Amino acid sequence: MNSRAYAPATPAWHLISLRPAGQHAALRHAAARFGARTLAVSPWRLRLHDDEATRDALLQALAGDLLVFTSPAAATAAMRLVPAERWEAATLVAVGEGTARVLRRHGAGNVSAPARMDSEGLLALPAMAGLQGKWVALVTAPGGRGVIAAQVQARGARLQRVDVYERVPQALPAATLARLQALAGPAVLAVSSGEALERVLPQLPPTLRQRWQQQPAVVASERLRALAAAHGFAHVHVAAGPLPAQLAAAAYAAARPSGH
Image (tube, rainbow, N blue to C red; front, side, top):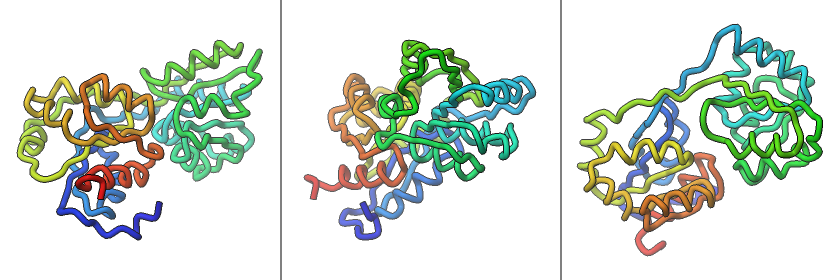
């Protein structure tokens, strides 16, 4: 969808972003093209690992058959730890196009990514077939993506997990909660991480949580749609994918009265 073709037909609306601290710029820019103001609500910040043990684990993984990257943050952290020339001959799989772009930008040559940008799409790639007896490294962070690890092992591969960054939880500031409480006009929640949603919801006052449950939410996958519904969200829309432009386009459609 070409967002330039759309002039906002509604009054100013807000997009609520659950991205990590300092990681809202791409979504903010995409939402602004649809006339939205973005409110950052970060349940955590990212801490990249920069130590010899992690570097050695990555170098060891490069001797294996396949490296699987579960997020752009994982790709960024790994590429900072190991020189670009070491990635040129490696076979890499990315969970989505955003992750693949980071890898290619740092010199990786053999990168595949699914059109369906989630764990299930990644597991359907040809590179993920015939894993019996192979050495597969999962480049990731603690928590999340358990489906990939379980399936890699179920397909007979030797799994090496390399945690190259971590999510450091942080409480929502009182000022952020106050801004959310005072928010007027249409608002849409963007969800690309189930763990982020589940960390934020308990921190909301009951009245604010109920308001969120009744306003539109856009999610990056059917799995997240089911999760949001399980948490009481009544108006959940599935975006074409997890990229900022895809989430912003779906949020714009959801924000318009009666879909007009």
